Image (tube, rainbow over all chains, first blue to last red; front, side, top):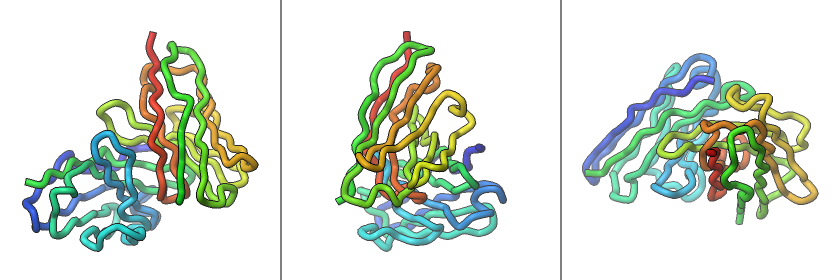
Length: 109
Length: 115
């Protein structure tokens, strides 16, 4: 099970948009529409933000959106708020197992 | 309200064993696959193991295959992770998570493998 590739950091000013990428292979991201994104604040458990590439769970603001092209998935956070500062992880189903990205620390400047 | 509560973590010597539990409530436990995901200190998330709703199918990461065993007791809404031959690199917070999309997570339990 290989890890998915995410940039270690991303940043934006309040109100701006930022996009985080997640690159895998045809055996995970490219092969299934089961890509999810999780937000994790320090000392807290991860929280589901996006599932099945682009779906938002109830209660997640529509400022968060997801997409996929080929072997790369993306999370876009629009209208950045201070509370969006956190670590973000992507994951993908890979046929009887799962891969996670290494995480991206999002800083709101 | 969905709740997942892990327990059983602690300090164990290399080569030792530990059993983690995940008590679930607020949903029909038996119809959902359940998973264990871990996070080493200061590191990212790593999928560890999964089990189908009936318990008939189990899945493991290569890093724990042959050492860890996942199981569940649907009559008590509880999932377990039996960990044997523990290594220093197994030190992590272990989270249980619900369903294929990991839509709910517990608060985690810390396992420290050290002499």
